[in-house]
Structures are given as C-alpha cells and as structure tokens.
Length: 86
Image 1 (cartoon, rainbow, N blue to C red):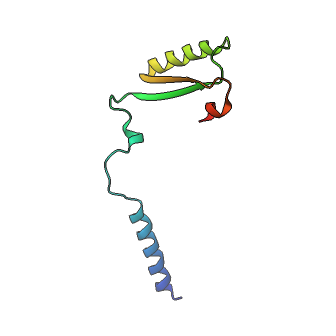
Image 2: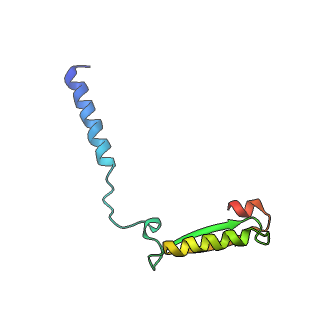
Image 3: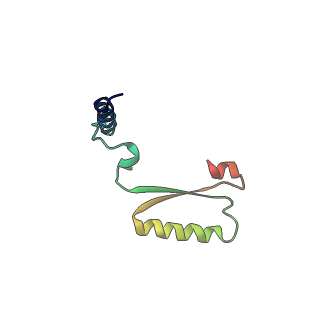
C-alpha cells in the first residue's frame, strides 16, 4: 500500500467514526426526561421491613429523598431475594 493510500484509508475511517457519533435527534429520551412533574423517582427494596432497623432505614431514605426533591418508592421483598433484585 502506498503512503497516500494509507492516508486516504485513515482519513475515511476518521470521517466515518466522527459521523457515527452524531444521531441528529435532539428529543430527550424517557430516561433523561424524568416523569411529567420533572421530579426524580428513586426506588428502594427492603428484604424484610418488619425487622427493627428497616423502618429507620426507610425514614432516613425518605428524608434524604425529600431533601433532594425526589419521590421515593419503597417495596418489601418479604424475605425473597429474587423480589429484592428485580
């Protein structure tokens, strides 16, 4: 391959790489848009809420979410690790 051919291939690759970076879509994705109120939503799942310290964790998490202006959704997995991880 000659020197100019290598340079042309490198320039073509660079151009195609840069062109692929731009999608041209300025609409926000649902993940970026948040909910209709503009408030962030955070979820937390506890393995077993009746245990003595989990309600305190819920209260602390709720206070932090309120301070950040977020909506906190808390779920109880009822000792089912599959529910906690889903």
